[in-house]
Amino acid sequence: MATTPLSPATIALVAERFRALAEPARLHLMQALRGGERTVGELVEATGLNTANVSKHLLLLHGAGFVSRRKEGLYVYYGLADDDVFRLCDIMCGRLAAEASSRREPSGRR
Image: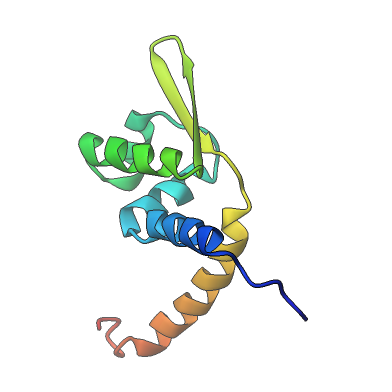
């Protein structure tokens, strides 16, 4: 399968997007949003992160184009801007889950 070489600008954009996903808390938020829109408070409850961290990570994810937001009354609802990111995540997470499982000691600890 032949592919066209990527331009330096495209490579930089891809790296920027991957950096946005290179944080466990942000991946946790993306997983929580997979079920639909949620408020910051709902995301705090779903992830166990504190409000300031959730807000900070949502801002970064929104800036990277992964998360959308809409205001309704006093609330801001966050959702996934595009579900395509999960195709990549499903591939990587499936492979890495199997790898992590094989690395565990019999007691389940590393």
